[in-house]
Length: 91
Image (tube, rainbow, N blue to C red; front, side, top):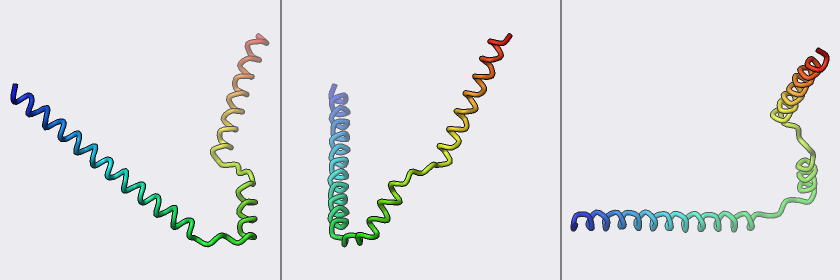
């Protein structure tokens, strides 16, 4: 029975140590994020003309190759289904 209790105590110690390490890592990451946010806030503001150009570029819709291939595949599937349906209806 003493061996079982000693093993259980060891396991509890390991879990507590791991939890403490995770809390320390979480605290370190929070501090890092705060430092980066403060550095970002300290940066000088962008010029209005640059900001206007960036907003214009970002608001323009962009068609990616992934979207094009998805549309082509969808149209192909619809066409294939329509041909199959027409074949069944006409025969």
